Image (cartoon, rainbow, N blue to C red; front, side, top):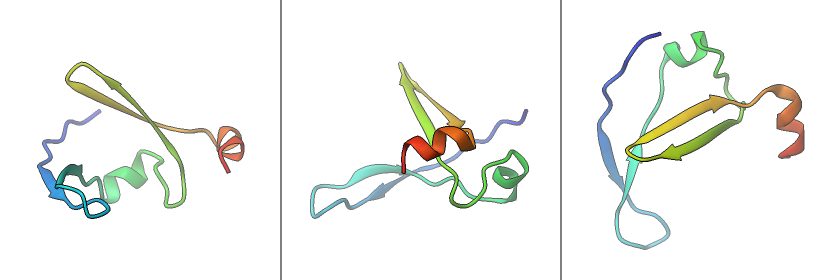
Length: 63
């Protein structure tokens, strides 16, 4: 498992004040199984985010 340090950017959302934005992109995501069109689950905790790939069977429940 690797570790990445990413910058938090600012993004405009629906004409509201700027909101924090984290951009995840790169071949390393593909190597980990995160393919275009896949779904992820984001779990929030105190001072952390956990991002998990949703299995294909579970994806069908969300469409």
